[in-house]
Image (cartoon, rainbow, N blue to C red; front, side):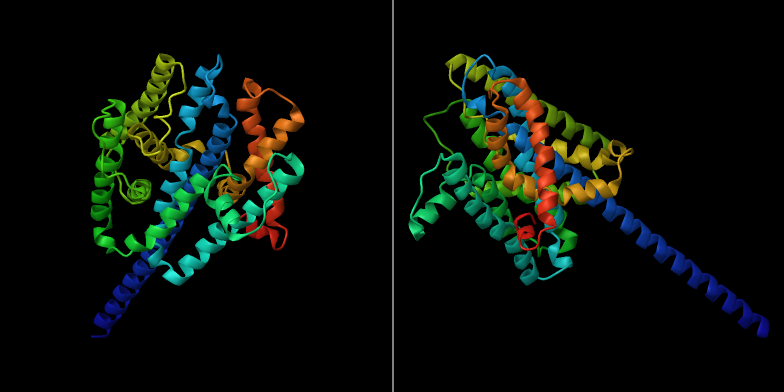
Length: 373
């Protein structure tokens, strides 16, 4: 009898040890997964910030000249910049309700987005009025402030920021879908938006069917990137489907580049139909870049400390907000021509580095650190 009890105790201890080891292994796997996710999301944000700055140092895209072909190539590569930010929003925030409640969610969004936008609009106003002297003074009444904030008069990137704000606004409406059904529901939403907001409008515009219009164009279309971000983050695609996404992305990039080139040369004026973020080629290209970074960031970062990438990723909103000030200042100080390759490419690299350095400094200054969340 004593021997039987002793064996039971031994077996029970073995089971307890196994459960403890299994629990530790599970925690380590979860920790490793979180670090990997944080690393690749940080890397995506860094890539996105650089592409945003590169796109804005190539604003001569809107002027048809002998430099336009190289500008079109760089601009085509940069078209995924803003969508990548939206994909990150979907990947990280569509399950916010599993970590904190909606009150905390909105407190964080207001602190990280709404207040910094207001602050940077004030900074841009004084910078342009008193330093660049290319903006007229205004009376600070409601109408003028409204126009400055919403009419894109002062801060050229406000249209992109609206996309992020729109994404933050709709996330609470869709985050509370049951976790078991999230992939199915979000996949359905993604496909619906892909058909209605990307494929059909793009085909109509591309074929120039002026006699018809698509009646289902909504700002809701930008949610396509939010759904795609969550799906790519949480669903393991098989190898063949990943290859399909990569090939689609390459085709999307090339078609955007070639079609813009063809239509511009044909008309002699820069074609504006290929710059919409919801155009099918840009959706395919952006999703492919996001997936590729997720799948291969470990190989890309073997020689770089993960902590450095994560730290740099935490600074990305700063460069996003302040890079126009750096571009205008750099351009005036260097006294270079906006068409030169050195300015359009190497200038973008220098400006990106400067933006990150300034952001890191501002982060250490009390009160001002709220400008760079």
